[in-house]
Image 1: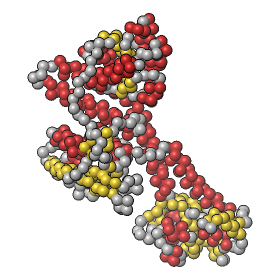
Image 2: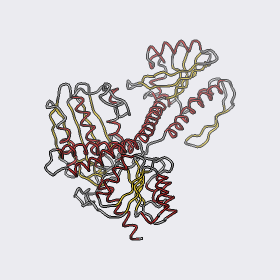
Image 3: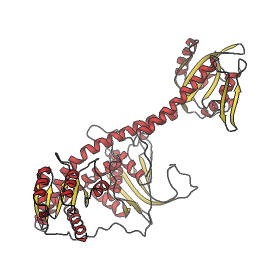
Image 4: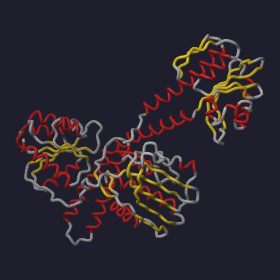
Length: 554
């Protein structure tokens, strides 16, 4: 998985970059004020000492040894000399720069401001942020420090120019990292409550489906409710995974059926003015991922393409092919590893994007849509998923000519067992279960679904009441199911107390989301099973079966 640098790491690197700038300015001031007699420089041939002698020598040594772009400029703006670093910044040669005017490499508006500052800088010097034109026609953002000096009887200036591109990139990455951390905090805060709501919808929805006659017209409707709630569940998990608050279980799976399913789901919601063209030419399409991750990639890219064509309609193209990146292949992403990839190409004939928009489409919360039309999270979610799958994503677009998104996902070994969708029998039992959850709605659901599975159930909403009841007769219960986030005693605290009273009681811990507990922490505390809400009837039944089996084998 691609390593995402934290805000602290980015801040440290940014601080180091700014420190280099400060050191360059300090060196310039020290030499100008004759505060040093020599420069000690670490170079390719080891450490060298330069003695500062003569009026011009200090500045020449400074320019040749500094890692920043350095030059001397006459009062009229003529560049008298510059070091190699400055020439590299402008993508030019020394001969191409020396003798030219500083005005020629600075935009006219900025040159007028800078020229006025030079005229007033006197002994104090001046500094500011400007742009310099490169030999190739581009521009380099720079921080300029200028100090007056006299060279060979001429008045002039010594200028240190620091390339700000790296600093600006770090600042952008820092803002991005802070956004991601904010998303993580927000996601963690809402996940627990939202998953509890979804748990109730799914739980009671499954009961309604079970109670309906086989020929009831309401069965497809309740199945749509369950499907929508399931998508909501996966979305919460995906946001948590995207913000590094949770990890998803990944298995080898084939892309073809998932692509067909996504098109089938979206076809009904897309207007007839949009034609879908599907081409699947990949000989092999097995990747290591979770179905929800692939679904999120496809749904967001297709929805994005639809939005670009919603006014006039157009053609939505989806192409699946194989790509083999050799070790010496020219690649567009430095992080891409050589190997076989599945390429997903989603094209549209819509409005396209301006270059400044295209640069920001993967930023969280950036959107060109109106209020109520989008949150700016679709493409950033896609980007996060693709990167976490060790893949990459590119975009090509021109205003009025549509857009093309290319997703490259590494293929996995085809001899691995693909995810199975075969139906399995839901296990039942007759043991006595203590069910504890502070949400009354979920307590009601827990009791009802467990009784339908044949178990005897005592359901409580108070964790201290549950502890007291268990303490009065520890042998009464065969298994305990407890929620993690509860007042008075959390599920983990309750479990530890119950295990102190009876060390072989099987316990299942459930949570909508919690930063304070993990599967590893639960296991270390002696808890048999750890479940993330919302929990389906089948998941709960299988978890109980495993926990009780572990008890009997002990």
